[in-house]
Length: 67
Image (cartoon, rainbow, N blue to C red; front, side):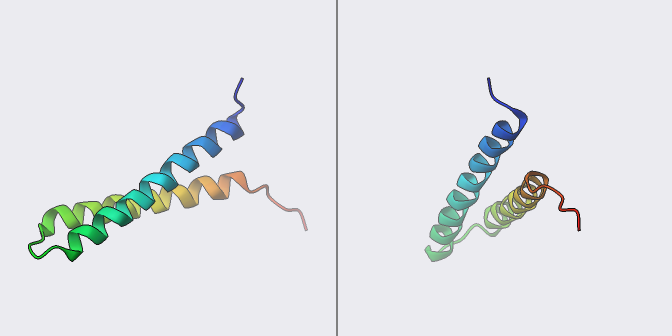
């Protein structure tokens, strides 16, 4: 049975993978001569949202340290 931590780690892995895939797609679109600016803007926005979610999950996985 998966623990909450395992599920968070799995979700984090999925998000990082999608983020990398978007990097590739955005780079390919940028290299093309004719770029659909709206599509490119949407992909970049999605990538930014993924980055925020990744950061949020990472911060939730790091235990609070007591000084």
